Length: 302
Image (cartoon, rainbow, N blue to C red; front, side, top):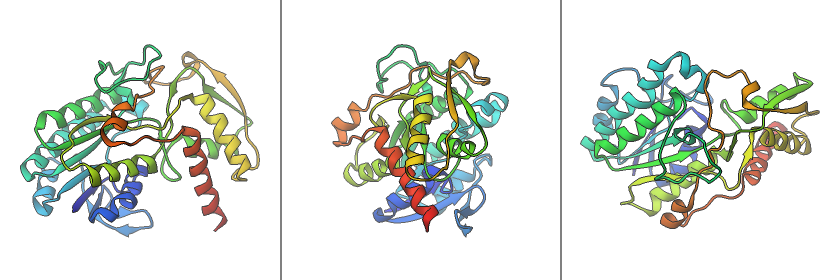
């Protein structure tokens, strides 16, 4: 299997490279032309018209993994044209190119396509109602994939984090050494999901289901608020001696947090379809957090 990996330098791309390598030959591409560790790889710019079509024509891959996205939720409000280009227009071009090359496209989307009302986990067929630019552009990208007619897997996920990259976990650990007190939102609820788990599910589905096509939710089991996630991060990090002290946490409502983009209040995703179609289910989010903290502690000890 020849696998074209776009966004190989991000937290998800790094884990996809690791998880999918046993399936065949990985062709990694990034915007900078470099992988973590300064290794060279192919270069691709999603803002360049026609670049994706030329790339697929050059390589004729069996599978394309698209781990590229404009994920800065608040910044997207200030640069909607860039978010639309990366999350929707370029995805449209990529999906069309996959159709022409008969390549299977794996695309990742977000819980932010939902409005967040209610307290029932969101199913794949629930009505979408994104609240901001990020959610709207990611939804447009999803629809472009479906409308293209290419063979595709769309995986919606949420609150993704890893031992590397830019994410809530790494920010919280950095701030532990800088602040005595942190104010964390307590009324937004979701399911923190390790990038490694999402990549593992991707590899398993690709190895088991050649003809599967559609949209699935892939998140860790359970739910928590950002405040609860932060509390668990500091508890695990202290136990692993990754930090020496933790700041005092103060829970606040979303209305008191200065953010440009409105976020869904309840965005836990229902993963029953993933279990039914592929026999896959992820463990509780606390287990994932413990694994990632453990990985970071081991890396520091080396």
